[in-house]
Amino acid sequence: MVIINNHNEFEAHLGKEIGTSLWHTITQDQINQFAKATLDEQWIHTDPERAKIESPFNATIAHGYLTVSLLPHFWHQIVEVRNLKMLINYGIQEIKFSQPVVVDSQVRLTCKLDAIANLRGITKATIGVAMEIDGQKNPPIPAL
Image (cartoon, rainbow, N blue to C red; front, side, top):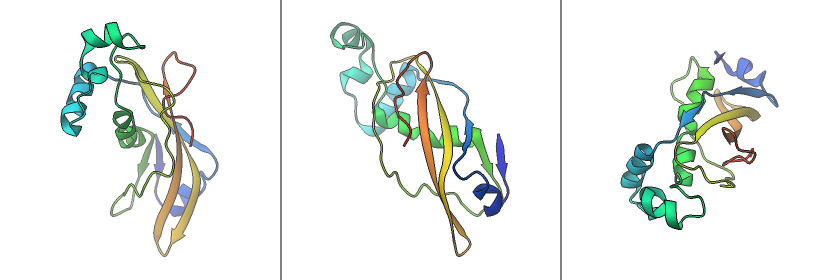
């Protein structure tokens, strides 16, 4: 884990990979809970028997937004930012779901600092991320 105590320490990572998270297994239970929370209970996510027969993936797949919602969890495994009042997700500039995440797959995140600015004592950082699936060539969320 990288510990960042101030803006200058954060800025020292500019253009560099900050780190990689631990692997996380996407379970059917997690997919079902996300489906209920978002009211997106499409069968491709929530019906393992039907997905086994009708899906081109032969299994259920995680929602794209479920994989995105894991970014803060992974970030906190990679970096601890100290001496701040709050950490806010300001936005997502571009996102592409290029590979489905099949149930029981393991995923992890690698991030790098693409840009950083000191806005009168407020640090605004742009973090590039890439998520990978264990054993898969193509990432579900490629580097931004």
